[in-house]
Length: 420
Image (tube, rainbow, N blue to C red; front, side, top):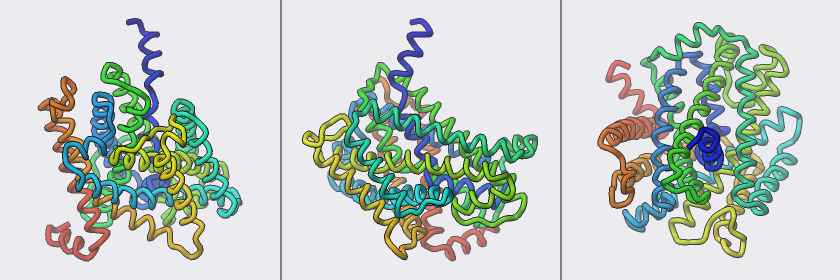
């Protein structure tokens, strides 16, 4: 097979891995990376590189399982582990994704406010566009729209270059493990990893592989799709951390939200840096606002046997499009609700995601390890060792993040006991 044919096949299957990986850098992710750079400079870049490796492993397992079985993750969980576990996973996923969808519309509102547009205009308009495009298009056209939105993330690369960071120092710290014993640093490091790998991402990449019709014979090209996507996820996160470390950390400017970051960049790096950051936030939030409700609709319909798929008509898949519509409406309404603390919405979502991620990761590795399901594409012994090691590490970090959110005093006592 010549090179041209291989590239043609790659571009034919490209999409699920790249879209899912980019969508992981959503509004909450951008805020986390920005806070990491603003508070700790370049110290957490190495941690971000670890999270990129973890993401690659998780996404590869999900995409491979979808290509080999032709079925979504929730469908396989129901068949292999029963209705009770499936109902638990879907209930928690529904709550978590509603909160995360609200945070994406919050990111849309924030980016438009930086450009001087009220959220009471921007959020309803963008919510309608997101809903209408999915309702009126098929999978192929929808994927092209999502891939175009992925390009907006490169505004962070331009912004990172514009602030003229000390590149020798950046590169040295990128490959040097940094560790601080303070609970705040450890929890920020856990947050950087936790915001990269999400439960909904695993459901979405597997469902989109199935919806696109990718099979085992095409999987070697889909693997590259996954790996390229995860590379650029880490690449974009790298520049977000660099841009805030070189400006906000260097000048000791405190920030709490993504809007704070964008506005703080203006006197330090110029108005264009602020606009680029806001533009990137808008693109990231729009992409995730598409993907989050779709991920939920896919997972729930797969779990309970309803027709699903973007290319289906509303008559063919009423539950799929109905659930998608409800999530869009509720997510936008939460952001517009007066006097509601979006901080508490995001905090609750983080806790719920923390509850859901460990069992989902375990289910994924268990399913991919079954030869009766995966055939020749089953996890090798060596890959299983790697997968279980990283799963154990990620589960431990996620549980620690969950404990720190619910019982911060308890976690501080533990760190103090071990001399951290």
